[in-house]
Image 1 (cartoon, rainbow, N blue to C red):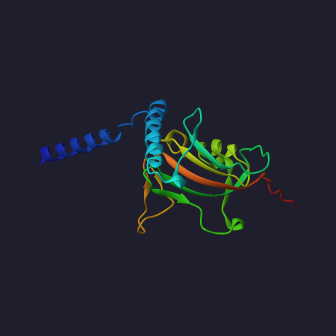
Image 2 (cartoon, rainbow, N blue to C red):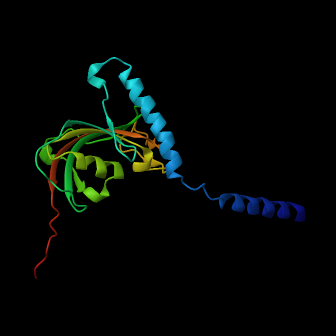
Image 3 (cartoon, helix red, strand yellow):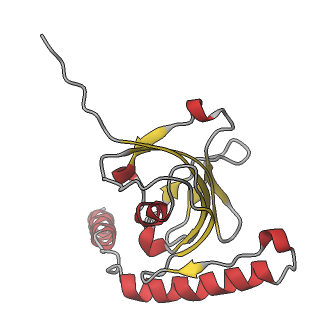
Length: 188
């Protein structure tokens, strides 16, 4: 009986120590190099299909994001972190897994959100166009959700799906509107 209790205590202690293991440190530079290779393979494979409408002629930014502007939009907006944006978009991984999309509704019913709440790739990529613009962004994981597993907004067969860690994202985005944030002031 004493041996069984001792063994049980040792097993519980071993499990406790194993659970305390920390994950390896996130190496953004190393991950960007991996992402860069995968993005190049992805672009080459899409272009190899021969379907002209799907061809990617993207430009690379200094931080590894690729973009293709279909329409620059109109205006000269300077984006502030507090700006509220309204967009229409479809997002998938480079493995063609649908990640997220706006509902198919009229522009006035599209959701809005704060510019600063967007992932880094959107914050940098959307600055390349103006309202009315249309852009494709291929965003390395280092400018998206990095090594975090994220619940995907879209669900398959009513089962929740997840965006894997270090996912490279491919977004097609139309910037509908940019509004300056106006705080609501209550008067008594």
